[in-house]
Image (cartoon, rainbow, N blue to C red; front, side, top):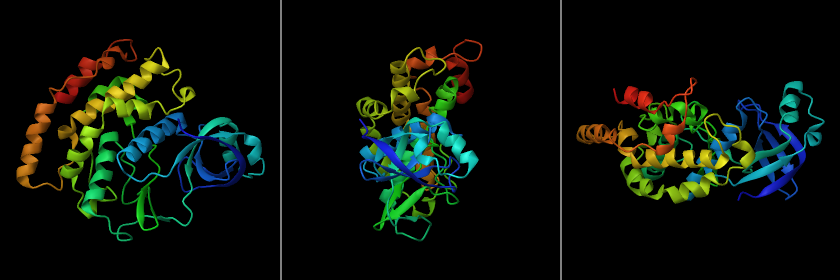
Length: 297
């Protein structure tokens, strides 16, 4: 389980982020950047932060520690901005905090030497989870003690915003062109060989089980929180197993690209997670066959 702390002081909003997170001091004497359930991106951004961040940590990438923050809007009574107050009042209860890295700097190309192996692992995680919000314009990377740290993973797992289309996302290629680490020649073949076998159902269950139950309730198409957790596990496990279909090839040789295309074609025959058959569309019908056939075509 993630550690749980209680907010004792709201320090300041971070207006650079679209979700307007806030710097918050807590009863463990820690200081965290807190993302709020009442922000425009909603609780699914927090779900993605937990799943993607904790998966990345278990794959050896640097992610600041995450905690659950019990937040009482009364601790932020002095915040003068009425729009931010609306967010805070809507966020009573559990929210998500990421350890504030004191003195950390925003990453920009050229600020730090990143070797191709590390760059490849970051890109691979982003490709697996569909995170398109780590670009040269908005890297969502920090440099702390001359090392690279991953922050703001809430834009990953796009499929969970429309579960009826999750089947079509399984083999979706990753758009690599503007990735923040694209200029560091990421070694994606080595990353895939090292990381794909580690993304097992057991590991994914461990990560998904860290998400608080109240962030997973009342999801259309699922009759229980355990069923929804199982769907996250099945989706990510199936995508990891089919990495040949979505692994970016823009840094590969022509021969490697041809091999990747052949592997991508073969991967369309991969088994689909059984849970997908149970997710209805807006008319109450299964979307698996139509979504899958459109993707293959």
